[in-house]
Image (tube, rainbow, N blue to C red; front, side):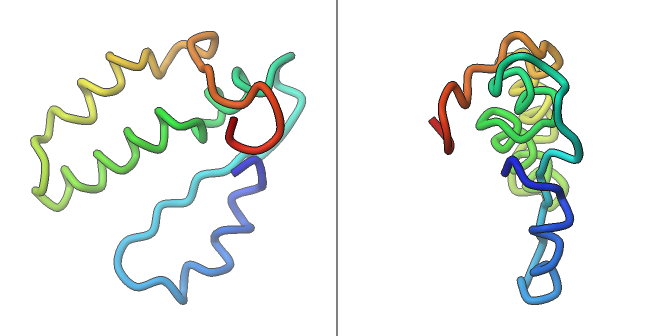
Length: 90
């Protein structure tokens, strides 16, 4: 979300199983929403990578799957983000 991590963390105790918190713990980083979401790792590709990391930790996918996704989606490149040119998850 574009919210602080504290917002989804409030329901953590009520969610069974693993729960990954993604959120923007600040603002004003960049001139575009896509770049900000990539920076805070809460764009669509970051969500995919986080999910793969959790599945790899449980042994449900190959341990290299998250690494491959990071490379494929150029996750460390803030300018490679494409999610969020308008409100919501556009």
